[in-house]
Image 1: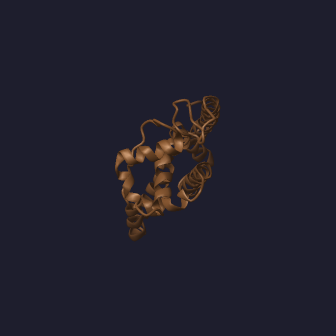
Image 2: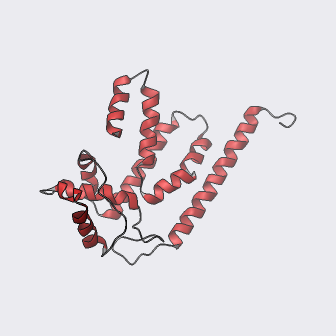
Image 3: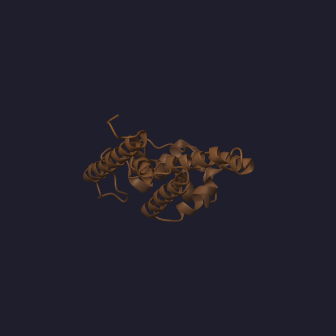
Length: 192
């Protein structure tokens, strides 16, 4: 520690540096990701040939199936792959029908939108929910910025994962355990 500096000063400097590095990484990742995308398909593809927001694709497909006569038909993996082939072209790689039936209720509103608008709503919802919950637990907004721009968060955004929503729910669960155990229990139920 330098003469005349306190631990608080060093912590502020560390948080400032983390926020700067997070912003740099975020911009570099977005530029690199966009540079490798193919916009020619019905749904844009990234450099790995998977759709943008690839993890969200299953959730969205659950939403599309939720209002059909037999949404359970996609638990037959061959049937699900035929549906993906019809939507995305033949031989789309590596998707599984992976959620329990309870997801139909949560995914239904997203399935009523086109894929890209649904992905945008999902992404904004995840970021907004995480920021809203985490804001009350971080006194320095730069630390929150560093978290939102961290490599893990960027990966969640790029791949359409539910991790920011899950993280927000976990923060809320742990903060509610002693004060509001019923609310914590409901959130735990929703996570399952």
